[in-house]
Every structure is written in structure tokens, then in C-alpha cells.
Image (cartoon, rainbow, N blue to C red; front, top):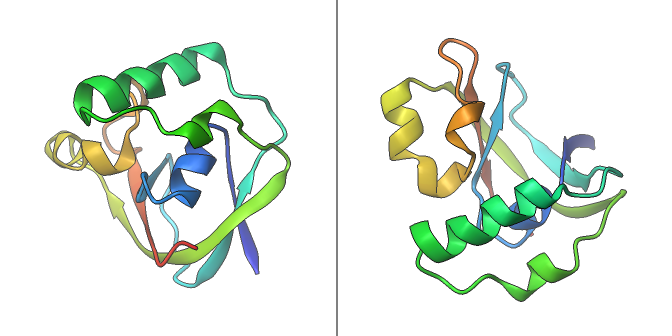
Length: 120
């Protein structure tokens, strides 16, 4: 099975079903079941703060307890990579609640949404 390596806290957000789209700088033709792997790099304080604010401000939800203990260096879940779509700026904004990535991640002609389904 292929691994999708994702930094924390994004890997846990995918594993818990809060993040359905992974943002990448390249397209992929992979359409199969994959494993979501949390990289060994500890999450940055900047990313943690961004995610906390995103939940409270944009989703108007309490910050999930799982964000208090983020495992690194292991597989967290499996799911199906169902499609990869090049993002326009309009699509980026429309899909924001599902990819949860900061605006600074968007780069015209170099931003793709990798859609994940059936994550368990």
C-alpha cells in the first residue's frame, strides 16, 4: 500500500475525518487505497495556532481533543485517494472548509486538491 506522508496536525485531521482534501503542489494519477502517515516532524506552534483558530473562527466548533496529542512517525489511517483536481483561486475558497489550508499555500497553476474518501 502506498503512503501519503502528511505533517501534523494535518495528518490527524485527515484521520479523524475533519480534513477531506489534502493540498499538494503537484497532480497525481493515483486512485487507490492509501495509508495516511504522520511524518516524524513535530508540528510547529504556528500550524497548531492556525488550526485552533480555524476550528473556532471558521468552523465555529470546539477544538477537538485529538489535537492535544499528535502522534508522529506512524500510520494513522487508510483511505481512498479518489481524485486530484487543479485548484483555481475560486475553487480554493469554495473548498476551504474541507482542505483547511492557509491562503499562503495557494499558488496559481501549482495547487492541487487530493480528495480522500472512506478514511478509517
